[in-house]
Length: 286
Image (cartoon, rainbow, N blue to C red; front, side, top):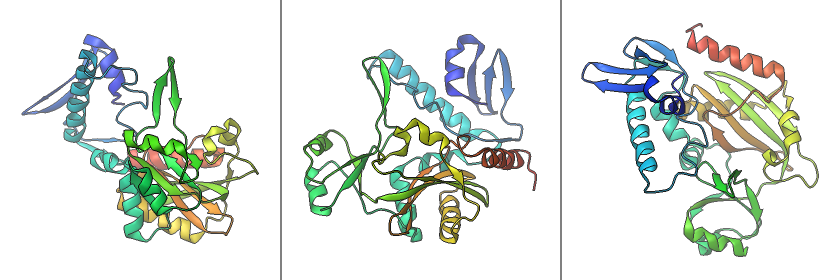
């Protein structure tokens, strides 16, 4: 596994090299030629907390930026049959790209604005909205790593004045009766559902019990099945972990695409099936 953090943290025992003849990576003191054909799965370019707490403009920030640039070039140049190509992974990690893909395909998606303007929010929405970060949504405060969850509020909420500091994704709030986690591997698909309790937070991740509360869907709605696979195909994702909701009115709507998202918190049967399907791709089994 080409983990950027491991390459950096291991000092002289690890590293990388790119020249006219190809590229190679050094792990535990051994150089590995990446010109030889391999199958691979790059879930993420680096861990979510990579670079957190590093002062902007510092030597460390410069070093990390240099590592990331060289590592990205190495990954692109490697002779690998990726589950998801690095270029596609970069594109799909953008929530704007996900939104544009859904719109172009006619996939149900919440009404959305990305803006730094509170006035744009009040001009677009009259009912309750949710606010989502465009990036990783993680930061360090008082020495702890914190996550920015999806936050519901009204369009005239005073907190939206902070939009001038950075653009956020603003969406109409769709009240869910169920959260769906839909996992795709190639042209295969599995789904599990979490019933929404009265008073539950808009972001199901905020409740730790929810991570073990999903139940397998034996019959996945055809619209969800067809369009989840269509989105994965359009974004060129060999693997995806998508978040859909079923509204109180019975509609199924896509709200997020995770090109390297988690799946092992889902029922064991799904977890094993997904892992086997990924192994099939890596071993080039039909």
